Length: 70
Image (cartoon, rainbow, N blue to C red):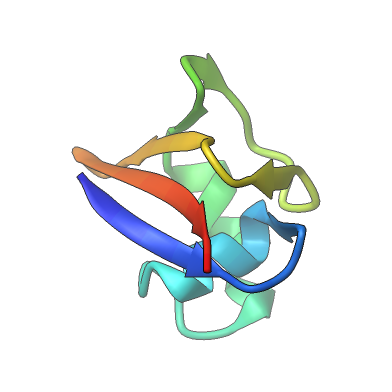
């Protein structure tokens, strides 16, 4: 499981995709989420504005990420 470290209270799903190096720009998030299955804490979600907090587990492209506050 890879950790994505954030310094703020939360990060949006779109920003997470950038931090995880799954997309290059924020504009790609909408298209990426249409084409790829993303699971947050066991629940499929495709809202790029979804807030992710420390402790959330995100599964995408056969990878698992944990959100961790710095």
